[in-house]
Image (cartoon, rainbow, N blue to C red):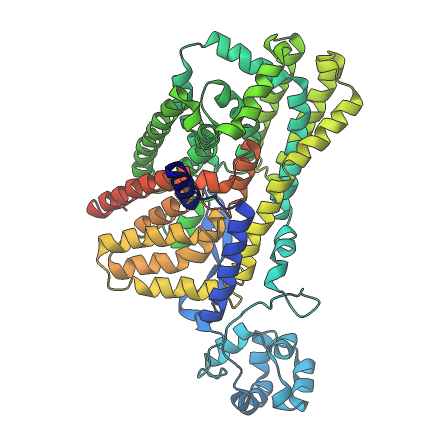
Length: 576
């Protein structure tokens, strides 16, 4: 009887972690509900030119803070009285590039039939009317919400939130989320499927472990600093996905777990990005938009990089030692067994053959080629995918020539198929995560959305706050904003035009506003389930995001404290 009571108690207190798909769907529903509660808003935008990290002039489309307005119905009475006068002003029509013939036809129609779309067709866009009349052409007594329907597509009934998965999967282009990242995942997965089937990585892991017995603990800080340097110098993010293909089995073979593998690769790279002194995709763009010299304040940031990377490595080493002593303490222990069993099953992998060495040298050559291409030639997702496909193809041909694992051409094709299939589920997560942003109305500052209203409201909330609290508040906001917008350059374009002048109002230097953005975006990239790069790395490691979150929540708290201390010091020394 007593045993039954204990068993029932255990059953009642047992909690099963939700699947990543379930978590994201819940966030999508919550985001949809928010759009009913928060009226939509938008900003006008303009091009800002700045000197980039290479000393060249670049441009970026950014919002104009003072142009924020809510979504209101048209004041058709005002428009009917004033558009006819505008039609007579030929200079204004030419200045604003308004279609005179189309405008004339529009004026012949009843004012009640005018819509935002029909006005825009002749050049009378919302931005044009706002520039001419301010908010006078709106009926400002009513604030409108921009909320998706329950179901629908752009062609039928408009976008519905239950179509978030498809819309997320097909959003973007080959240069980014979601289409580009999904394509990269599938190509890299297929390429590494071939490489893994050659046995070269397994054999290489055994060879390294045999020659470095007792030195395992030094691998963590070395790897951590290397990947952090990659994040600090060229904004390493998507590039970590293929590296993880090698590092996960290697780190597990050293006696640790897949969480350690993801931490010393992806987390380290984002830590480096968070305190980078030279990343062209974060600090350079943010400083350019904020109107301060690009790559200024590098000395302070370099000190922060050394200290923060060291603290991150130390945190990881403490966790790693716990797992090394008792692997069963890892929440990914059962999942990691597939890597352990694979290494134990293939005893032939312990023989490090000439063919294995050639394949590993080919892999090293491709990795060097990628780093060189990213830094010197601005290679991005399409080029990186192509490079890894070449790596898989050449590695497979080498395996066929040297008869490694008796590989044939058909085996190469099958390995590519299975490797791509292994990451198909991760590709779906990338699309689902992108769907959250679409449900909120998107990240375009020039389109009405609930997200723009949130951005504007938070900016206003900091007015009159003490300097130190304002700096930490900016940091907290940038961290939370990154839960929705994970693109570093995109987040800079959306937030810096608001945060930079806000820093002036509260008495902070704009350099501190940039620092708050960097750390908020960089640290949180290692946690947010909408980060395509993180989801890609977790997919490679076979870690469900919910399990990853259990580990990361504590680490994110640690990072937030570090970031707050850095900002307190920056305020105290008036970091410029």
